[in-house]
Image 1 (cartoon, rainbow, N blue to C red):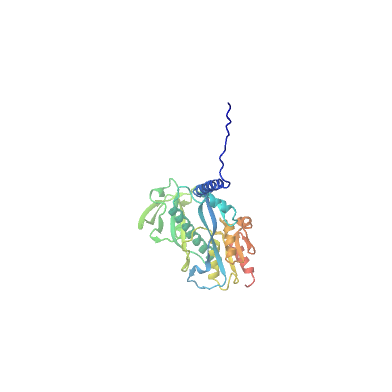
Image 2 (cartoon, helix red, strand yellow; image 1 turned 90 degrees about the vertical axis):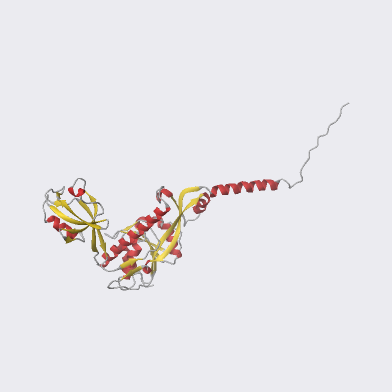
Length: 345
């Protein structure tokens, strides 16, 4: 006798499986998002930063001090590390730029060291701006200190002088600049000894230095040192930069000083933004970073024009903008000429 066996299959009611699959997918996506959020990339995201009117930061006690109308805006960028998700988002925002971390700071530099470095850059930038502006206006910086920057290897001075020494006297006479020291050296011969008074670690020390012959002309005496000249303005002047760092405000602070120390309005009442370093010797405007972000910030601040270094001009044109005019300048005179060409606002 043959028995028939009937196989039966138990089925779940329709609609009871997909919630589990959906929950699993959501869990997987969530885990991927958490993982991506914790993956920090070797990049900094640079976006538009705070803006200041440089005219408000210049304080001077000069023969002519004006209160100009208009604005000369200093532009900044803000950089911060990014994770994978932030980097993807930044890729869709034309006002944000991703820059490799090693291009910004050495891998072993601490946050405090980085902050100190960029603040020192701003301090140097303001000194350069003061020198460039005063030279443009016809003022002369006053020499106040002569520093030993370097010493030629093997010369007698190497035994008695140190790098960083401040030369305050020669043969009993005060020294404030190279013009006080060089004539005394030239009045002696190779092999003669002169007496220098130097300030070292807060104390004055007298040393005797034997003069040697120059390499290109052994009959001309020299000490065998490289000098650095510290100068000061002929009147009190200060730039209040606060906690802002970096070297790129040089051009705008130079223009601000010129505007404050001369009659009339250099900006013709316009709101002008700008960026670029400044060379106090010839007024050259040097390249900076983050120019596209600065164009965006300048337009948002209501500037009609933005001055940019020639080297940054093509990159600046890539910034998203509607109406602001980008003006390339290679030196201080070009920047002044452009401002003077503007019609009154």
